[in-house]
Figure: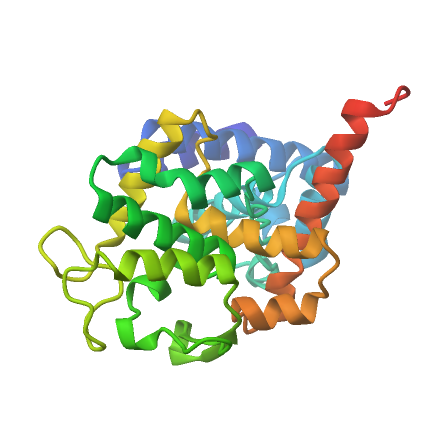
Length: 300
């Protein structure tokens, strides 16, 4: 009976739900695995009646076994989606209304670790990106922008929304407006001030209400232009593909953590609403330490 149900389900999925061949194949594999598990778990051949009587613990047991077999959260979430579609079919065609499946929480995929650059690569981007252009003004502009991103941990849009008048006086910190119009205070290193000062000398219109970083026509610099400049530079300098403007922000946080900064301070500097977001950088630091250990320890 279970094989017949799976065949009928695949036909329904392809014909009535117009699912693609790959989806039908994947869902069929997941549903068959579930039916095999159910037979072993309950001790009876899966049927419409037995599936109607399954409880939340049965579904959790299936997902738990998948986790033990090495399935990551995203894979188990897909299997849960396949089961929900399967039980939707059972309700439509066989009147099976099992609400237990709705009680199962979807496994959350793990957020990827932030990809930071090495200190050497980050400095190369910040100080040498001008090599990607032959125009002195663009060289100064791109150097100032990338130095600001790495030296202050700004998001690219936060930097590009700055006006000339937002640049603080000597010894004052920069006031940054981040997500949700939330403001934070970020100190500026002397090297950042020097790079911005060099750019302002070549700025086409350095009035206080004018954009800090301008494009070729004098308007506010587009993020895509800055990203392309960094793409060109990383290929020229043989830097990794994850060398992006946002990677400079990740590098700022990772390198501060490696230097002994506490998470609360890094949270404030980055403008994270939750400390848990900042804590991801501890995983980066740990993974880097493990990589060093694997490469250098004689017993690794």
